[in-house]
Image (cartoon, rainbow over all chains, first blue to last red; front, side):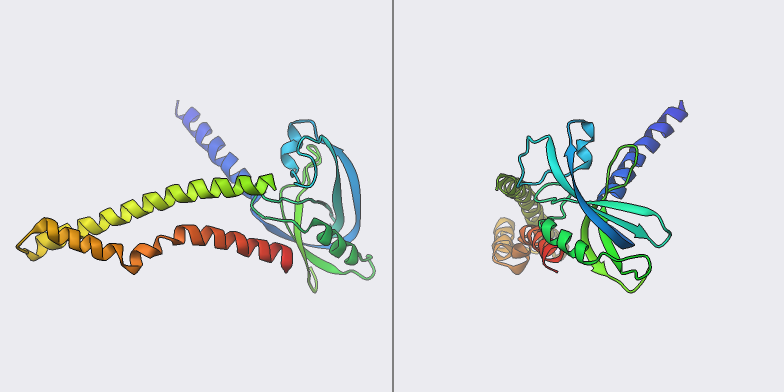
Length: 144
Length: 88
């Protein structure tokens, strides 16, 4: 009987911890490789992993989303999306998506001559759910 | 525009509720402190008038205005976040 209590408690706190881990900011030191914009069809429950920008229709299922592709020091591919959080949740109040896109394009570098940047982001990359962390800001750093 | 207004409405409602609760709680704490002071010092005279005078003093005090921080801190934090994320 006690098992049920423990399983329930662990599940509840686990969900809370996962929510915090998803919403709170994290830093990654990466080398930006490229950026692209892709049309997304957000008509499933996975819409919760994407933002709702104000300047596009709320009801729009299909919209264009910008992405930033990068590699970290360990050679892992990291892909971020670049979306306004606006006045919605989470309260990052990010409005400068286009500016960030410009900065990201300016920071593109090659493997031979890397330019490292620190990306502040929230969210989690999941290849199965096709969810991407949302890049909030980019700061140049000297190295990984 | 509408999401901004939605957020503003939500903030106004929630912060006003919190402000009212903290205000009332603070005033009651001051009342309890006055009553304790009356008892501990064994004061004589009109107890009700003593408490009323004390509360009037509190109403004009700086401490009461401190409760306005309930509005200032969250709005200040939002303004700071907007500046840091978008402009620097």
